Length: 498
Image 1 (tube, rainbow, N blue to C red):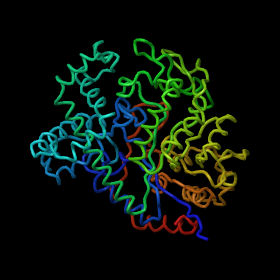
Image 2 (image 1 turned 90 degrees about the vertical axis):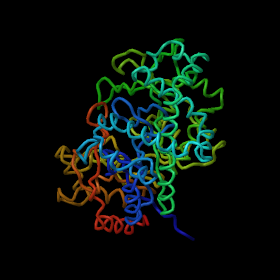
Image 3 (image 1 turned 90 degrees about the horizontal axis):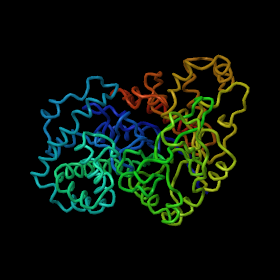
Image 4 (image 1 turned 180 degrees about the horizontal axis):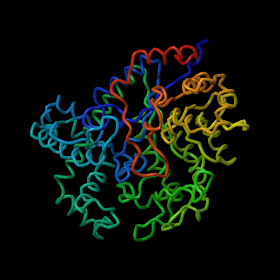
């Protein structure tokens, strides 16, 4: 009988790839990373949400749950296609620090360069091709609203749709016709961006799949208020007659925050979703499986219960729990879409009902080793407490790097970690924590790339509840060392993950 192969993967955001022109893209360096994954015995590449980002640059606050981030379109591939020249790309300022993304410079330059590519591609007849027209038709159900939303948003100086003129804010038929005609050029430009994004991503994913690498995507449970989704589909959310949220999403006060976390996303009107047979959710999830092989569902506990914060409250303190759709949504999903690969982000304080929901779905939950080493506490995150149906991480995009974590660890916890791991050398502790993940009985282990590179806190991706320094880290262009690939492969083989 063939033994089930355990899997391992690496977490690395697209933005962190060391591509040219300021931010990671779907270009040659991403293909190099796929080759590295294959050589190092990895089966999975986990990324962060791919949606277009706005203020704060968070991939978890996107202008659309369907659209892709135009920043990830590779300009060098557009040079090869004949839509741009190297001279044009080099004439723009995308930032001069190859280890960090300068989002302001990217924002000010990227769209100008892509507009030149659009003009050239249209001149060369791309927009008249069958392939291009097919893309527009097949994606019209979300693309039409997204492209119009972005064009109108730009025409109003980038402000939230709540500040637009009333006729277009409320999507009056005459206003929709007027703006579609008036902004036709801009709308076409946004459609072009999405075509390029989909084409380049599809080719990169196909390359990865051919090498035996599956893509783990990430779906935020909530959408941003200032998004095409909220503007185009207000019935999906708990909004008043003016389109303002009645309540917003967040987390209650806990040991990490005395006032809780105020996310500000609009909350779903689950009774409406139930009436439609969760049609929008099925559409959303089905689309995700065109992009990814495995889906990590963020804030899974929100499907059981969610924290309702009255709109306008300055903190999340006065919120209360409301019931979510529970298992019913996932039952519909299994019937409509079949059995799909899902990772349930089940972190935080878990009530018995959340634990029952995760168990009923059969989806693996997450184990984070950085949460494990609390001296004197037999934590559920310690490897000896795992069952096979889970995914173990050293840390996530919301955690410090493991080296940074160890540097800031209380001494009594570090002493316990050394005892548990059977290793006294501080410099080797990071790799021993990786070893603990890979050697555990968890079916899947995913390690952030920064931990394999043994990088300190300067390589941290995100610090929750802060603005300004997140989502910026980029990997060094010389990081993909064949010796490191060999080292990772040996560990994968030792712990039966290849």
